[in-house]
Image (cartoon, rainbow, N blue to C red; front, side, top):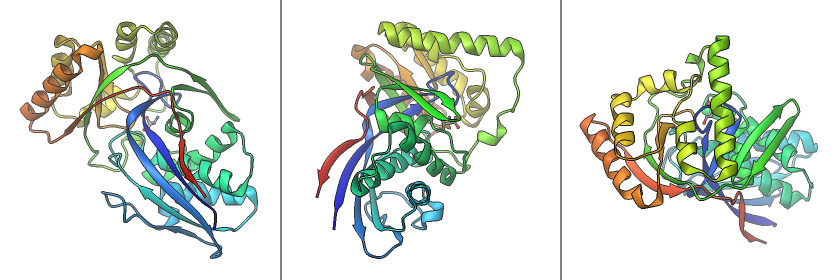
Length: 307
Ligand code: HSE
């Protein structure tokens, strides 16, 4: 039976101020996912290769939900085995569910020869995000699918712009949420003056990426008036950690996606120093975390093996 193995990158969604519309693909960490068609007429998920507990029930699994949506749209009940080999921390705001959902939709599109467009695949894959307790936001799945920097320019219908990024050095303090999602804590409306501030920050992110200006990008991602004020509350000492990173030479720092990981942007030559500052700051706050040094990636889903 036909099979495919894919790699999909982690992503930093929102990238500071771009709530649900920006995301940036990273060189690492990434997930690998193997898929095989079969005669069962059902979706089977095997998570033996994952280092964390992930539900195998397709209705509770990000890849499963995305594939259910795809099979509905394609009007077929083909059997498929999905084996994610997880290397992105789950529930840490690094796009692990988006990567799995994107890769599974990309893979099945290929195996069944459906010829879906990128926007169609992203629109289907975003349903996988519901498994992580969230709504069907498209930022992580789009970043994982296409790589680079993405802007979800429309949700109805889904329409995504992708921009090649310069090399953006990034240090991440990986921190898992204790609760499933913090999204519901974000107020549904926003004061007009705050909207103006947020618009300016979003414009600056795009400007910095287009110019390849890492310092300006750091300034742009360093503030967010929607997600950061809410999610940072769950990170003990967040203000102090951020100040230490900026004092130590990071250009900007914020909460990654739905949190609670923290990411910082800095010069390439400073990544090890910033990682050390981050580690020490977490230890000071009694927070257990893993620190990752990585960078932006212009590669989205990559085919490792097709049979
Ligand atoms: N845009 C989403 C959110 C990203 O902020 O909830 C989740 O990784």
